[in-house]
Length: 297
Image (cartoon, rainbow, N blue to C red):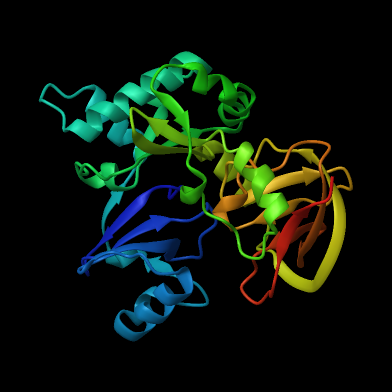
């Protein structure tokens, strides 16, 4: 199983993060994180051009990693359990990551070994500038965290995130972004170290969803006003909100996670997609222009 937030080290010396849970045969949908020259800091679009020029096997319509190029498949839960069971002295960033997991476990009643450690601490020891990136697994656990997430900042050594470090989705207006910032309970500082908490499905949930659905196909651009009905899946990738109108609102822009709440009225510019009888409104499609979610009320 290749799950969102896993990492892949390739035979070409590249490092990718797995994106989402739906993958084409023989390939894993992913994003470029590190090259031989260091951390990739440019956009996804730039990464696509770079890979097409230097490593064309990693690009189709989107960035993918061929299975035969994977040297190591790194899993966040395995990393946490390895560190918890280690008898050796841990690196400073690993120690503080486990301490944050203990706080999260106490606040949300989650066993520490069920919280994954991802990004640079997944394959290395990090450095004084490294963030702590954690992963919660399973819809029920993610939903419980969202209900209790505000309580997290009542613990000592925890502070809300600085707005300058929140990823702002394209074309979001100032008023909407201001509200989004106030709701970012999945990002903050622990003892001065920046952290993020995101969600991923369990293996069973991935299998259940993949067996039920063909890939979504674009139908047409649409502008709709919708009411948010449920935000339980807003920590997943892609971010998803159920709406009172029965049309799921989905986005691959990470900045939209934990941004909208039930009862919010939003104006959405996106692409209507269909898979069999299922439909969704996607914000941030490959061919879309100026797609965004605007908070109306």
